[in-house]
Length: 404
Image (cartoon, rainbow, N blue to C red; front, side, top):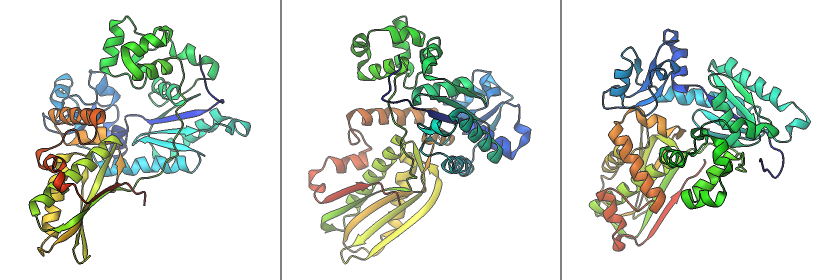
């Protein structure tokens, strides 16, 4: 059963093995070969891999050492985040030039809402022509799914890969979804998959037949959302895309201070909080700035371009280093601030370029705790001391994310 308030036409575009495809544009000798993108050390992990590499059982987030064992002939490339972001923007610009409403879901995928356009254009033909234009102007392979909502169109895209397209009409949704594995449903992670398999549920049709109250008891509210998706129900709107340029936070003190240790604790907390917000929104930053305002309102800012990241252990030391460089007059300070700019999508993949599998799992665990119990429920010792000291929490603390 498919329930929508009005007929919708939602398109999902997903660039195929995006990082690998960009590298192949730069070096055609990589065509047809097993290619791995990620950190080059044995302790790092795979950020992306070609279809040829997947045949060996390699997948994203796999330790690079294991991937090398599975395919000793694999070509390993460190990756170029600036170049990937450039091509991502190229695709976005082409879509923005044509689509009435689009959402950039990540560095390599977009949703388009073409509802109502069927009165003037054939949405299937229009979507096909847009996909052909993207391929022609960028040289990148891209797959497409067109259906009644975001869930079905995304699953259709997955079935259309590599470099294909698939249209699922409203009356064909349940027939299409039914035989597919429950793993195809967005939001079904390893834990949910294992629990459903233990219940004897392996395909979407079986899941769709389970009474919703039973799913609610077993899996909670998230399980009910998965059950709706299994029944082809998804009313989530396509969110009109606006490019967020920066994230920043400032702290104005009730009393001006010259306590450097206190200032460092506050800046560390700011950096950690902003880094978490980056990861939560699946973004990374390429520029870090620190601002101070003295008691006489004299304001100074310094910044530095960096390799894209959203990880605390990369960002916080730089913030403290910039503060040390900036604060050289030893006058009373009334305000400090941190700003991350030059933001791009793709944190889950891009972070894998530079980090070990242990580090990736650590950040995943930290973010899971913060998502469940709040952003300040866990933190590093330096910044956590500030969060727990009420005497240091007087004054104003503003967090904002402008879209300048």
